[in-house]
Image (cartoon, helix red, strand yellow):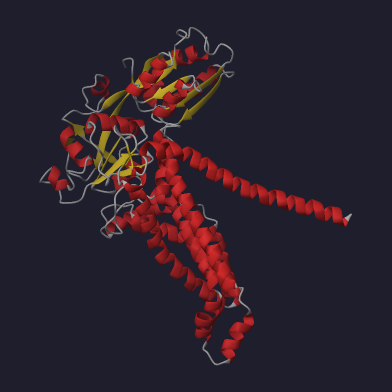
Length: 261
Length: 286
């Protein structure tokens, strides 16, 4: 057994999942005050790397394993099980004053790769103003999802402004009428306008069945090389996360529950 | 008894001084060790390429754009801070009454205690909307970062320069005045020359501080890895890139190591600046 000697649970990884994990831990601690859990938000890649070298029990990840990681896992004779904890849609947000409601993936790619520089190139009815493009920094899982689903391997233009926090993106888009950004759907506020992508709204059902084009499952990975944890802290944590209550908390954090509504 | 005390004291001082030297060596050693994998893997491309795409496939680890951004921002901010700092210092040294001097000193001390993150927030919340009004396309840009760096380093520059001028023997100024120079000439031409090593030191320390400042440029410079054409373009200096990506990077990867290469470049620049300042002030004081 992996953790039968201690009841201390270490969780590392995605900053996207961090708020969900935090809510779960708070709730679990209410029921079981002896439980010792440390949670560290450090990015999906860091979490998976920590799982590979055995310094964490659970790796939160806002993306599936990369080929490189699977290879390394195989080389070391390990086996990680993915568990979908929730779904997340990436919302494209613009200022409320901008006269646009829908955007195609092609246009979005054009904007982020720097081919479309002014709004009137997107739509002739829009003002001839330079597009101010915001993105999360390169190490974030949201960035990686956006890169895979929208840019499809092409490089982001150097004029894209890399920022650290989603709140900052929303703040700036709400102030600047010509700004655009992408954020996890859970963070969207009333101050900005969410665009439809390819005429599909990022609603719960559209994200859950993946008809909304920029949606993704959120995972936690556990090491099951020596079998599935049938008791202990890991098992307790996972069971709670996937329970009705755990999934309600995922919704409370702004994501879409992975197991129905 | 007294001899023993002296010995103990000097031992303590030696130990502390030695630990300072050792930690400097350790820092250099640590940064170089972490930077080696990227230097091996990407080679000179790190210093010659403009592309920074560390998480792409294939990745690109060029830090040249960020290095140029760092240098441009430092030059631009220095051009604002240094003359302003000199004017404030000159006024404090020569024209201010005791009361004014105490007021200015107090204000400077207070201002230098403000954490840089507070200055960053102030810029983002109150100054950045104003940027859009005066026609900048991006609310965070070189100008905004420079304003922040000015607020941050002006107190430091002014008090260092004032110290340099105050440390000059009063008789020099009095002599100049006695020979019939005006008050302005005495301060500006005579004392200034004598204080030059100190002022030069202040300049280098200020530049050093600006190039290494992280929080303000992370929040206010805009974060775009582009070569700027105007002061309204957003940029991303080296320190901002390190601060922004270090938290989420996979430890031990080439990306991680490339960030250490950036750190090494900054450390080297700051080391050379300090060394030059020591050399020059020593030569002048002879």
